[in-house]
Length: 387
Image 1 (cartoon, rainbow, N blue to C red):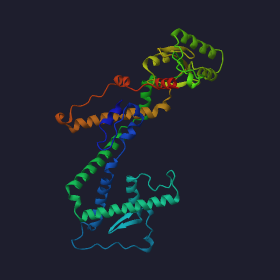
Image 2 (image 1 turned 60 degrees about the vertical axis):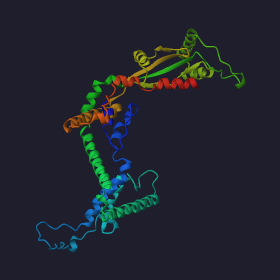
Image 3 (image 1 turned 180 degrees about the horizontal axis):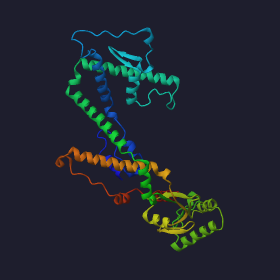
């Protein structure tokens, strides 16, 4: 899928490359901003700018003569007003002053929701302590950044390199976010995609019946007398499966039939139907499941260890409202990939293949599906066998 391909070009310093099984979180990982390893560097970058501005004298009006100070405008009693809370100075380090708004905006970039009274587990006392801790930490960082400027450290090769990297990453993240917003699909595009791919959202509610040919150990045997039960032939397994099906057809509750079958140790029947969407079953079982009519059974697997039958309880299709978030991510990923590809062409990117190696070609969807882990059906069947 397109939005999976974006993972390969996102985030030099922190974006995680994830596979198809984590597709629902793909765009969240893409939009994660600054990686932890750069946090302190970014703080220093911002504070160096803030401190530098604070230590510079106020710029004169371009129209004024050099050396002449400009008197502050007179404030009449009628014009006097109390500064807004956001303009209130809450921290000072030397000549540098930090307002409430500046502090909260910068801290939120470091620790999102820090000191937020509405965050989970927050109390008045804990929020005040958190704010004090953050204030102490911020004051220490601001103090050290002031000293770094005084010592000329910002011009050292190592610090200059880190500041350049931090600036590049911030600009990269900002542009990436802008493109992501540009790639957001409209509701019309989402509806058109749903209509064109409606069958992709078909799903089946089905019940599985496992008959063990190799039963292992009988549940009623004592630990010191355990012995292997004789294996059932395919014919004997089918006869046992037919018996279970007749019990269900006679009106006996599936939950009762399932409980009795489990107790006997002969197999496993789902007491309640399970829902599977397209792509969640193995190709052979999916083909059989979507070909059945409601209430019909089909034998889908016969191995030396077990016989597997499925019953279609109901076939339906997810609604547009149910799949809109998924389609939105899919379309946004496609559009974002197109924007990035276009930007790459315009930027004229070149890489020395002798140093970096040749480009890796993504696997087609068909090949990627065959390499997926076993389906939920296979996993649950394996678990049932082990029990």
